Amino acid sequence: MRLMQAALVGFLVLGLVACQKKQTRPDEQGADPGGGVSTTGVDGSTTGQASDLQTAQRQALDALKTRSVIYFDYDSSEIRSEYLQVVTAHAAYLVKYPNAKVRLEGHTDERGSREYNIGLGERRAQAVRRALQLQGATEAQIATVSYGEERPAVAGGEEQALAQNRRVEIVHAQ
Amino acid sequence: MSTSIKRARRPAHWLCMLSLLGFAAPTQAQLRLDITKGTSDAVPIAVVPFGGQPEGGPADVASVVGSDLERSGRFAPMPRTDMVTRPVQGDQIRFEDWRLLKSDFLVVGQVQPGASGLAVRFELFNVATGQQLLAKELPTTEAGLRATAHRISDLVFERLTGVRGAFSTRLAYVEVEGAPPAQRYRLMVSDADGFNPRKVADSPEPLMSPAWSPDGQRLAYVSFEGKASAIYVQDLASGKRSRVSARAGINGAPAWSPDGRTLALTLSRGGNLDIYTLVLASQTLTRVTSDDAIDTESEWARDGESIYFTSDRAGSAQIYRVSADEGARAERVTFTGSYNARPRVSPDGEELAMVTLDRGNYRIAVMNLKTRALRVLSSSNQDESPSYAPNGVTLIYGTQDGGRGALATVSSDGRSQQRLSADRGELREPAWSPFPAR
Image (cartoon, rainbow over all chains, first blue to last red; front, side, top):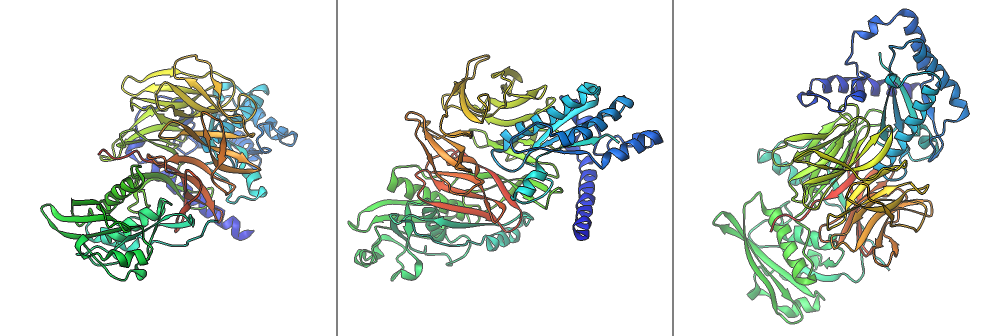
């Protein structure tokens, strides 16, 4: 278990290095005709904001981080009752801090066709978006993206792995 | 029943030579091809080692031709160890030897100095009658020998089957390295036999859905490099690319119209996926479907008038067809089973390949568009992304091999299968190129 955690930290560090490298690529420049999703700054592109966060807000955010993934049943975008508390906690944060923004990343397991799974991941992200908005978060605070089956949390085809990959990750802008 | 032939080919030697010739040594995975299901009624053919070149090298013309023909599933090349003599031109052949060895056809040839560097002369014979069926001389260079060998395979295949060979084509596919959640994505293009892999794009964020332009010069694909999906079109010769769609929400599933001027694509407005068309020159965007369901995975009909796509508007994923005009009504195409997705039209326009849920397994199936009869071609449980060879004889698709993504091919009659796997990482989303210009 300890070994797995160490490996996970290693991958995260690798991921961060990769992200930093990516920012310097010239083909990343240029106007984004879509706007919205790519500007939420989860890759650290809005550095400086983090230090501006009030201590209370930062503490609230840290508390949320321990529960920021919602898991789904196979072929379903229904938020299971056990995750309603998670949605409520994130919604309360967004209501309390109107400047806060969140990005909902929808994912599926590996079964089925890839582009169709992009649609299923989007449907899950939209379900969480609606739940957050029902509890007072505003549309402007929420961006969604679907990765379908392209970015699994864990490898493997057994049900335990598949269940961990059917998810929406709630990522707060720092 | 089918016989199983296990055979591995190692491109490493050839790649070493490439680097000696001044090309950068590729850092990506090496590919390996295994024939997993052969046919017992494949036509026996002998491809004798060509004169004028060492045997067994990466540019061994006869070896490349033999492997190509074997991969088609229609031919069974004779092992070299069974060959009693090694003729390199027609007048050296004693046909009775080859009749005794039960070879129906015979290919002989040699590599010679030529005007442009080298020339490959080859002849094809009917062993039973001794009749010469083909005799040609192809100019080439040392570096072009494999390409010339594929050209010979094309000519032999067409002469013996009446179907144009697709051995001089290419594959695009996505290669993924690293363990989740930190993975590296590469868009690759290789020769049709998996040799000569070249990197087209490389990203720490997902790359997906490569689609060849009808002229084979460009690839459209989806990249998440901006932390959201966008569609790019990249010219393969120059590497130059342009971002053709990065609208808010999903930009996915690009598909070229037969005239190469328009992309069908999937966009989302308020989270609802629909099919649109985008005229590349004018950037004119037209909405084709508007349903609350997931509409995605466009594929143009051969006449460019209508678009096949996946939709779950009836509750589960099924394939529909809609006129490419604005606001047309879609008609359902598939009715067998609870899941049919990712349609691909056969080159003759008569069949539709798709992913189907077959007794709990995702498999590749082909449906006859007239009779609606569906036949399942693959036999694993996680098969996806079918793509036809431009001659329609073979399909390539994504599968799993020991829990890792690999590519597999299957003849459109389902009788012969092969697997293309990497020595590391995963392979997925193969797309077979169009024919090169004649």
